[in-house]
Image (tube, rainbow, N blue to C red; front, side, top):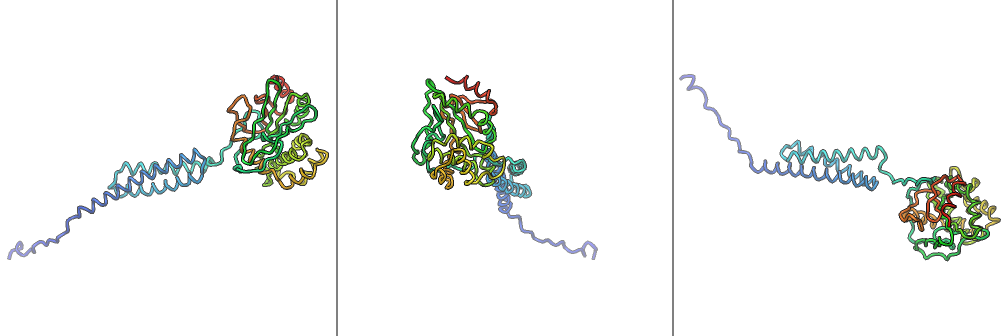
Length: 358
């Protein structure tokens, strides 16, 4: 038998043909992953952009999480190679940009409460802290939100009944054809407010004594954050309201005392209520029991805090610039015009008053 005849017949092993539906299903899954990666990546990027616009840290974190998910989906789709490559890459790139954006934002501290820069001439800036209460007790003789002092003679608050709870302050009714009006926004913790007081208190008393000029003092409390949790600005502003209601004839003296080096703390918690009452009593010749009890009970602290929020969120009443907003203290207007000079320069302020006066 020849060698050719001795060779065994080749063996054939049958192999099942490929399932035409399996490849189709795999392609569909990869395509779905690619499209999901692109969609989630774009949503992540949009979420991060929104977080920047609204300074919202939690929203930015959500964008970062979505971005990581999109990266995973996109990479998986690319590995499987059956889906649309463009969609996968778009998902990965947009997601990566979102994640990098979140990292940068947190790194530079951009996700934080917005800070409003003070207007020129203002000493202290404000940042929003607490939401105003919808219903608060309103003091007497502060219908405008501030105390409107008038002469002739010793400055006295203009009388007004307490406003109904939830009512907005009522703007001072000015008559600039016959008189002058000065509007002063202060925070009793603001050192530049103290400088303005030292430089101009006597002059303000003089023009009120002449009888044709009113001085409205609006006490704010946005510098509570410097009081180590004792909310001194609110307590000082509340104390002015207590005196305006219960001992009106002492209100101008109390205002001056609150802007004195003795009471204005350079740093730290500031005077407690007992020390506040004692110091204001010396300035006023003695506080009566109703005013002292009001300060002890902090009756108008909520009013002071709500008033501050309202002031910063609304235009300045009676200003010639109808869009003018308070951005810091001291802010002083004469007949609706902002004084932009040095708070400590009495000569500059007196010249400005004469320029604006009727």
